Image (cartoon, rainbow, N blue to C red; front, side):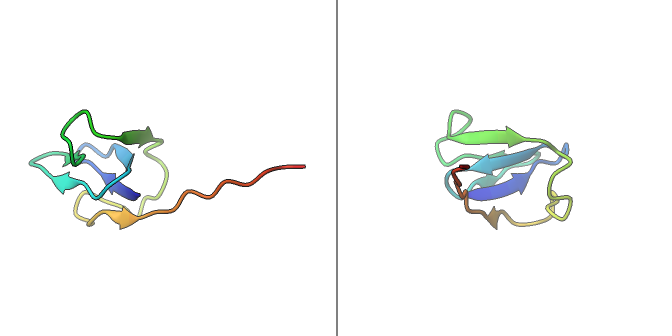
Length: 63
């Protein structure tokens, strides 16, 4: 998975390495690729100029 931020400051989590377009990052299969929009206040160190950052999703069970 990868984190990337669009030129308009929206932040996304992609399942595969996205490709940089003129104003946004594209999922491998285009606009219908697998991605999730995140709260744009998260990870301010990730900018439009930053390359996609590898990310891991860790599940923990409570109790």
